[in-house]
Length: 252
Image 1 (tube, rainbow, N blue to C red):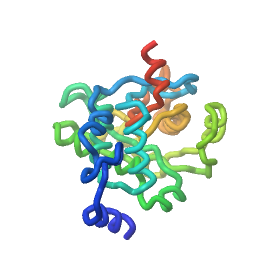
Image 2: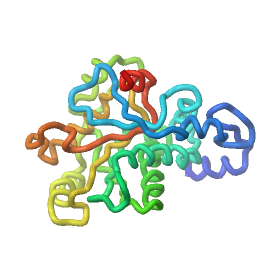
Image 3: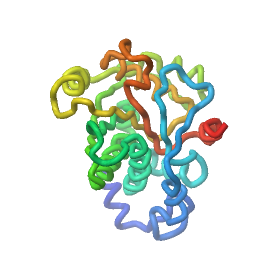
Image 4: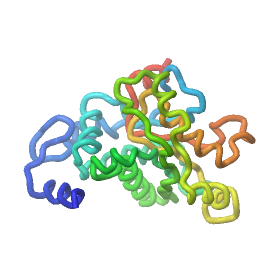
C-alpha cells in the first residue's frame, strides 16, 4: 500500500527535480547528465579492502547525484528508479562487451537489512537493479536480477564508521540464500541456461568498499573461490555512484 500511495502521490502532487529543486520535473536535464552523462569509470577506494572486486561507477557521489540517490532511497521517489537504473546499466555494460557475448549478465543486488526495507517501504538496490536489467535486455543483452544474498546477522548503522570499523561491522554478515547456493553450484557451474553466467554485484553506492567485499566473499565461497587465483575471477561489481576520492585515486 505504501508503494502504491507513493507512486499515486507522484502523479497528483507538484514535483520538483530531486537534484536541484527545479519545479515540474522529477529530474531535470542537467541533473540527469550529472548522473549518466559520462561513461562509466573504474573506481577504487583507499584503503582498498581485501577481496574487493573490480568496480565500475557512473558518477561521483556529490551534489545532484547525492540528492537523487537519497530521494529515491530515503524519501520514496520511486520514479527516479528509471534514471538510476539507466546509470547502473551503463556500468554493467562496461563489463558486458558486445551483445551476444558468452554467458548472461547476472546482477546480484547487495541486500538491505529487513528493518531498513520495511521502514522505507521498498528495497532501493533491488529496484534499481531490476530497471537496469530491463534497460540491458532492450539492447539485446541477456541480463537477469538474481537476489542471491541475505543478511545472516544484524549489523550496526554504517553512518559515521571509518573504513576499518565498517570492515569489522560487516565481516561475515552476508550469506547466500538456500536457493542462491544451489543456483550458483548447479545453475552457474552445471549445465543449465545460466552456465558461464557473469556475476556482477550491484549496489547504489560505494564508499569504503566493505559491503561489496563482503558480498564478493559470500559469492566466492559458493563458487569455489579457493580454486581461483583471486576474487577477480569470481565476479565484478557495478554501482551508481562512488565517493569522489575513489575516482581521484583511480586517476593517479
